[in-house]
Image 1 (cartoon, rainbow, N blue to C red):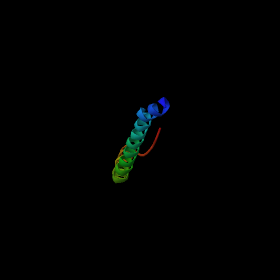
Image 2: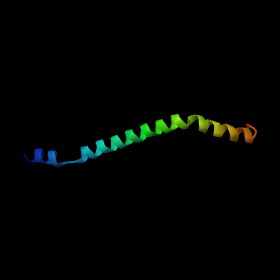
Image 3: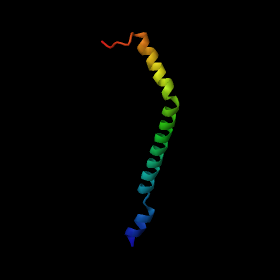
Image 4: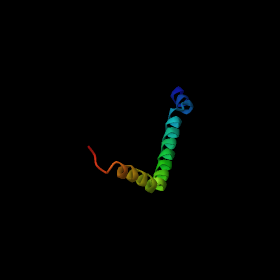
Length: 57
């Protein structure tokens, strides 16, 4: 009987689910931002590459 009461009161599982949902939301936001700004980021790196001559040491 005490084990059932303890199981119903314990909130560790709820916390794990909340962290999982937060991680999923961050991943979705990251994918959305990177897909939106991907071309601009590539262009910025290309400008830097052109400015230094496109050659690595």
